[in-house]
Amino acid sequence: MAATDGKRRVLGLGADPGGLSPGVKTLILFGALGVLGALFAFSNPEASLRHLKVAFLSGTPKGNYHAVVERVAKGAASRKGHVTNVATAGAVENVERLIAARKGCTAHFALVQEGVDLPEGHGLELIGRLTRPESLVVLGRAADRIASTQELRGLRVGIGPVGSGTEFLVRRLLAPLAALRLQLSTQPIDEQIQKLERGELDLGAMVIDEDATQLREALRDRKLQILAIPRAEALASELPFLRVGRIEAGHYDPVAGVPPTDKPTLQVDTLILGNGCASRSATQGLITVLNDLYPLFLKHNRETANLSGLPYATVARTYYDTNEPDLVGVYAPWVVDIMPTASWVQLALGISVLFNVIGAFNRFQLWRIDAARVSLERELPTIFGPAIGVGELPRAQPDPTLGPDEVRARIRSITERLEALYDRCRRRSLSFVVPMGGEMAYRYQEALIMDLLQALRAFTDGQLPARRPG
Image (cartoon, rainbow, N blue to C red; front, side, top):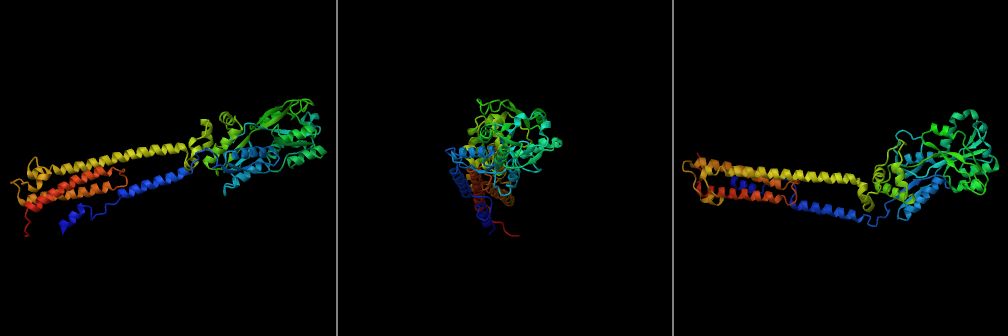
């Protein structure tokens, strides 16, 4: 009975070596290949922007921010992308809504005037900045007559709608000028222009593109004038995100001379912010659209220092550094959404190193098993003499100086160790870390061990009589 159990154990019928069989390994491999094939089916062979589906916070419907995002939406649509233009009051509201949208990802990007205050822990990131700055333009019916700060005393000034970048910027600029007792009011830009025309406001401020249609109409059709901001350089030096600009004489009407003289203005950049809700591929797609619309967009963002204090989105920083999109993100956007391409490369290198380590480990295990088998084989000449082959063992004659009990004890010791070595070799061959096909080297060792075991058993059964009890 003991001999039968031992034989079953050697043949692998009574032991559960653990690990995965080659068949299971094959199924796992083909399953993984099937999943990769299915994912590849969702790739983007036409390099379209079908994966770009985002909501973009802009500004008032007739304002420059709204016009910019509307242009982006059309550019995205031409490449099968979808950008929803969400109208808002302006930059300050955009910040609040973009942060709040992180919970449900109802908005992904926003245009925000640089310098707008951001709350602690806002979690926003910089996508880029528009190539063309906006200007703080102050209009009035008699703005050309104002030449000094003192002439502003007590005037009625419109500062844009509540929550707009205009309101934020003007309040900061006028904070040191409280002694002028200006009468500030907030209203939409359209209403503000109408009040200026009717004389209900003396001045009206707006942060706007210098060539905006709304501004041209106010100057040419409504006959409003641009205020030459007194001490513009001094005001700009107080706020690092501002710089002095200039609108040349006759810019809006060279014949009529509108404006009649050069007008200093304050310029501020427009930032594109994200809240982390958009996928990497969607962010890359948005930058691609912006670069299509503004050919200098990449160059401008690559060469302009980031003084906003906001971190760049990783995909944006990579885009600007390489001056081109990640090609994997272009043709297989789902890949970069899982992990950036650079991380995939690092993962591939890590897997390659891991496989090399596993291969070296398996070769080491095979060497140990082979060395143990050879060591056991070297004990046979001490029983049967030198130059004994495995095939000769069943008919071999042991050393006559050894008694039957000693021969039986030595062969039993060798047999038990060979059985243990066989079990060890079988467990290693079925281990999950053995590369596919690598188990054949273990099978070869198993065959050598089995041949030797069978030869020793044949010798024991044929030439060593059973030991009598007592």
